Image (cartoon, rainbow, N blue to C red):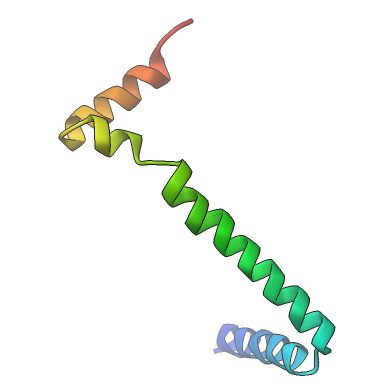
Length: 74
């Protein structure tokens, strides 16, 4: 019960902070969220393809490849 109270107080603290934020602060947060969306969604789709899924058929083959790469001595 005490944990829920703390989480509720933290949630209310952040909500009141965002409600009382100036327009400049909201614009900065909007820019931050747009940049994070671009970094984690758009770039991942176009520049970081799923290597294991495209090169190996089964989970067993994928796990063997990962284990081989991790344990390969130089």
